[in-house]
Amino acid sequence: MTNSTHSYVQKLVTIYSKHTDVEFARWSKNYLRNQFDFLGIRTPIRRKLTKQFIKESGLPQQEELKDVILMLWELPEREYQKAALDILEASKKKLTKDDMSWLSSLIVKKSWWDTIDVLSPHIMGYMFSIQPELIPSFADKWIEDDNIWLQRSAILYQLKYKDETDEELLFRYILRRATSDEFFVQKAIGWILREYAKTRPENVKAFVRNHHLKPLSKREALKYL
Image 1 (cartoon, helix red, strand yellow):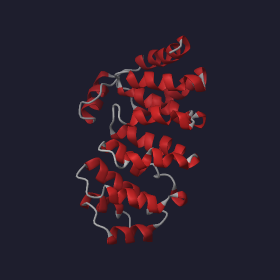
Image 2 (cartoon, one colour; image 1 turned 180 degrees about the vertical axis):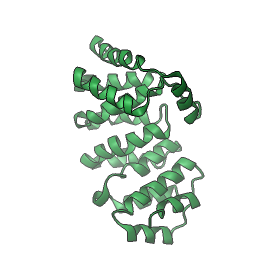
Image 3 (cartoon, helix red, strand yellow; image 1 turned 135 degrees about the vertical axis):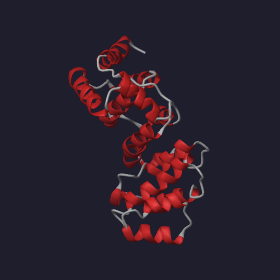
Image 4 (tube, one colour; image 1 turned 90 degrees about the vertical axis):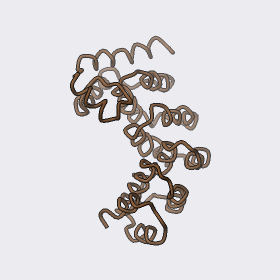
């Protein structure tokens, strides 16, 4: 890790540290089931601070991006993982297939829906859209993994694809985990089907009608149909 990487992250830490809110930090920690510590910065404020930080300090150079993201991921307060995701999304055009291994590690470290639901559709979804040859090495393996966050990531990466959705692949992933008892997997199935229904409502209705899904998944899938 270079001095410039450390300096970059420390600038953001200094900025965030001036906007802590003990009461909101306590509420936030409770909201995420006491899994993570918080500074207590509300999302609109945090995004504004990060946007200003990027405007003044720029985005990390390609060769430093990995170290910046991983360094932010290691910090205890959850706002720093959110900052990492903001920086990563703004920098995603710099990413290459060689970055997929460390990007995938973010899915299984400090995992919860608030990070997965950015990583999967916004980062992994982008990577798979421009390099679909990566899907067999990553998403196909995630859906088979015992880790529920990898399963959720495989299901949700096409969330924003609309007409570009690979329907056969999506339905195959869903059926692979349709019997899961995990809430976050059931919810992901319902969510992706509900979203895809905006593009192909009849296909989603037929899929739900012809396959056995958990009640939560089915209810979410048909919510607006």
